[in-house]
Length: 579
Image (cartoon, rainbow, N blue to C red):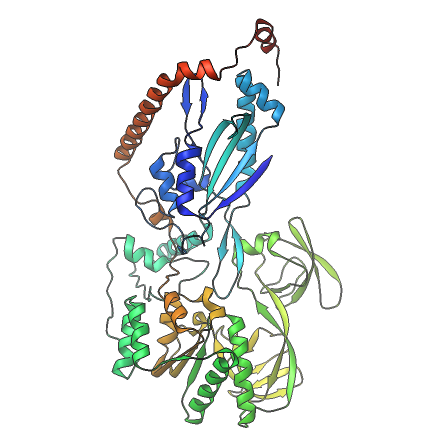
């Protein structure tokens, strides 16, 4: 039987190890059995064999036991972050009584084998949260860092054979290693040519490809140079705020914006309405302007206000046409292969032809069946979509979007020789199911991957430059706000930046949090393996001597008070017990 308890209090978690887990070790053949490290995550951290107090406490504090580096992206306040989950695998009472009172090693070994098998099955469900590009999904990782403790009695000292699997709140995401394959292919293609990698590691990194540039910059022998002079911002005080943000001195950058009166605090609809008015004012002054928001919910709220202001000013036609568009969920390849991620009603858009699907076709998910999906074509016919077949596609949802002449649209998918993902366009006319753009191009009926382009996420804002940038960040978007998001957002403008929020103090506390991920090389740094082995051996010997001394001093007392002495009949019966 499995039971689980989440531990959130750090002090209680450490105390639980000291006073319970480590003090009730199972004794076999007169030897102490300390806790054992389990799971692929523990192996990647170099944790093997016996669990030490120092290692356990380090993981409780979300730190790598080898170098003290933080393991997960965010370390939340005390009581908000789960320190570990205590999964207890218990043997039936009858097995416990026979195993403990008669000291039958076969039953204990059978229990341990069954518990380990159960843990391996549990580990396959391990997943990491994906909080990028507004996504709030889970990505399967299949690895855990856990400590196993075999106990032979309950807290009431009754015979109770059970194993505690203390599973720490950290897992390693294999998707973040994809960049290594891409980088290797790049170097193989270049051969003897010179490769120049350019970018800003203070901005957003690729979700699927990881932090390749940052890792090369910090952990390789490659030489790198920096361009420290910022030229985009024309005003000195504005440029100072961006310089501070680029140096990761985000709190100081926030204070600089406050001194510039660039932080506006308003409540509710006033927040989005004020941002919309500022947007219209910039357009009236013939300035390029960009609204940036952390989440798509925030974007939709401010877009509604902007379009209302534009209609009132006569800049947007009152007559609208409703289009059914495709909203990508920005899933990674691993998520696309995972049947648990899908639900009926989702849409799949195909980039290439294959397995009975046409290029550019969009089908609806009808049902999830094991490792495949039942999908429906536009004509009502159904087909089976095999997951993991390597079909180039995107997963998303369909929704209705109202479009009018004068609207700005954000294109969200590449179309060879026609459209580029992230491009902003303006609607000149609507002709049936096609949209004529101001630059003469036409959005055909089979291209439906677009949305309103008045406000974008900071990811889509990267690389863009405008006269004025307006950042809208209400408290409901706080989970998506971080150091990188703030830096990218405020640095898009040449002349002016304005931040709209409903809680400036709360916003200030979030913009200092980094979304930088821990790479494998940072989780397992190069170290002196001989020194590590000697240290572990020293810890083990020290612990063994202490427990051996304790065992000798209490052996007589324990035998006289607690030992159950079998009768001659029981001794004979023990020989005939079978599993």
